[in-house]
Length: 472
Image (cartoon, rainbow, N blue to C red; front, side, top):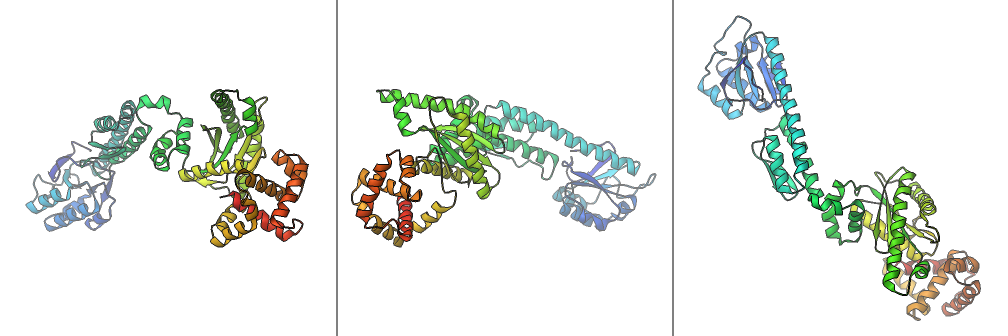
């Protein structure tokens, strides 16, 4: 809000609103096209035109353009009726109703324009000072919305209202001004401070702990945590690939004591050691934002990027996973890693975590990928149809009728055998069985299914059926 000795108020608001700039107007017809927030200074010729009904028209045009002030001037040494200390009632009413301060200026025109411009620049500087003061006050408010609103309002000199985690400036905010823009910045800072929560909670709310909550909490609760995650710098709106690292089941048994609780503690301690190494090693890989969290019996490492990298990005993620395994594998303990496909946003993050877990469940390999070739997604869409489900059950029914672990054991052998192009040795390696046991069970499966596994069409049908059955 600029105030100058060279300007005399004639009508309208006693103190002009904060302005965005000054414009010199030589013709009254150009007033309507001026930018909002301007102080319009009429030249001597234009000021002489602004008399009677023409002044009324000029004030209407200024109000419509969003001008904050209309300044009447005259050439040096001249005085006009318009630049006197009184205007008629209609002009005064229009200035008041339109919120346009009608002012009279004396002295050199160029000097007057420069003085107004400097005064407006001073408004911007004052807004910047208030913004800095408000930012400091918000930071000291301790994350409590009501205290944040009170501190921000006092620093800005504007009423700030809090509604939960949302903030707004009251009705006295001058539209289109430096102070409005300053208030907008402060309100965004206030929202971030409120999202981060009370300061006494922050030490216990590390990024890793919050990431764990986002992954394991019910979806509604996870959505409520999203603003806090953004405030702490977690890139939850990006594209995510999840790497799930966990000790093999057999390894976990070997390290456990007779007391199950002690065994669980050993497993958790192992994962904590892995976690510290994983974060350090992942960030050395570069090219993406990495975050890690412990979730249940596994370490979750999230690889986030702003854009979907497609198949090339997934292959790069698998290479990163292999390098990460080499760097974080503790002495004497083996680790397995499941790699998801890429998904976007918070829901996508949770989906990727589920895929990484599925990848480990479907394979016993040290590095297991979910659907790198796109096959699993196609199978899921295919298996959603009633006809496909009926076909799978019909093919595998003799094995399914065995029920429980026996059926699961034979299906795992059949799938591994088919996935490895009929090699009992490679299937045995994956399943940790003797190759003779694989060969014996394959012959049993052929008898149960009355299938010829040397027939390419039957092999393909059974391979698809095994994959579809395992995805249920």
